[in-house]
Length: 319
Image (tube, rainbow, N blue to C red; front, side, top):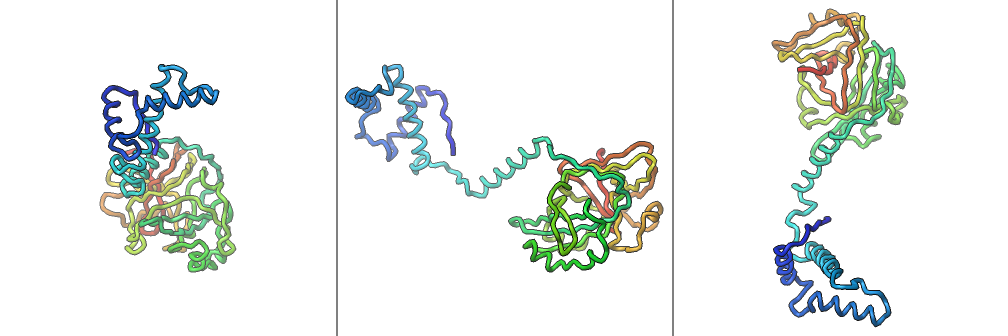
């Protein structure tokens, strides 16, 4: 722990001196500081060496340098002035984590973005590799994005129990096959090194925080979740988009449709999908053709929901 010392005043001198006299480093029988400085100067002169302080004007500087050193020693050794908060205490650790998160959030993102074009209706698969982080769970999202189109035979051959052993994970969850809806995507995560997962190349592209109940409870639909990633989804003018609108007017644009619940669901079915969905009261499904490009950005965090067919939507900026 580094300590800083203010400019000395009469009050601080008296306070410091009184505390030092009570400590076990300085005792009442120790020579006074000026006497020891004078003695040290004599020793330098006998040895033919230039003393540290050549006149009385320099003595206060040395005096306060010695006081600072002794105060540091007192804070680290003396039970009278030992810091009351241990760096290993839960309160200190929690405060440090909050500070680190705040600092990280304040820094602008400098992650380079890599673009993939012409991805509308392109097939991909994901694995959620769930690991323990203290008392919480986190899922690293592995994706075939930009590597392959997730051939069905390779996807079916993955044994999640073996993937658990491969990554030392708590659990591995399949998420796919899926198909993109955007026309172009830019990601700050696709530059990460891919992994060979039982013959299928996949790379980590995001991280999700989970509760244990998320793995136990029945999946909740039309409930917003936060995923950590840096992306831009671009939907081009003249192309259709499929959206859910919440009762508060928040708009979520579909980023992918799923063939998990209904393996026969196809891109051509999305325009009329509203007739199949049963969202909570006040929600609306709509399809529209864009008159201008639409970008759904995420800078560190994306807010997503799923419908009962596990199609995924990202919240657009706005109310």
